[in-house]
Length: 310
Ligand SMILES: [Fe+2]
Image 1 (tube, rainbow, N blue to C red):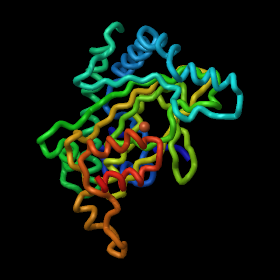
Image 2: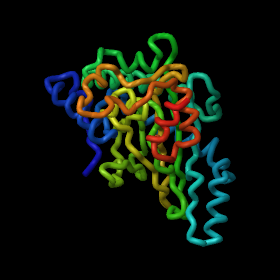
Image 3: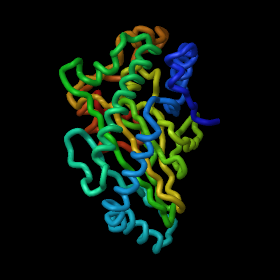
Image 4: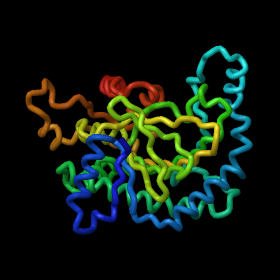
């Protein structure tokens, strides 16, 4: 079993219907898929790889060596008492948004990442329109929901991560298992160093490294909006002794002020035999995020309950 790989360029040709169906199936059955021929040029992707790796070497690596993860892991390895490090990830990470401060010492980093983010944001919006169509929602429905109508701006963030070689991968996770809080996630992952796995029918499956593809997954807000039709999938990153895994994840999330609720069209379509037509509450996204901040690595259902009670 492998995560579906979908040729996005076929959406514009004779195979449009088949491609829509492949995306619908991937959203319903997997919560994860890989997009090939997504329209982002290989030349830009090569530059992204280069500036991200250079930035790690120049501006991050020394700091990682001094990080809590490195210190705690070495203490734990010395104790050798069978315990695993459950409170930390073996990850170096920083966030790029339109408003925050970016690394400034790496030549070409800002220009390249700004260009990449603008391309990725367009791709996210195209994908959301495909989801609208597959779900029978009016075109632009998901984008408008995340933008609070046109009142606010959806959040678009990019997490630049590295998972450096780990001396004791059996004692720590690269990134602990979780589902993503937000909307649509577009991941440009390392094409050589693997480690990302997603949970499918109770089994951890590798998200296989493939050159020039973008991995897509859907977060908790898509699950709520679709009334559970597109469920957010659990995923994790395993630490590895070899290689420094690069991973650049961009999130198209609701504005903190946006109100999120199941789409009425999809509640009406729910099975009338069910006791209640939806298990999902209506809430303001910032309230969800305050719950998520405390419970990211725990099951998601209690998060929906907690935000309902707020
Ligand atoms: Fe994630």
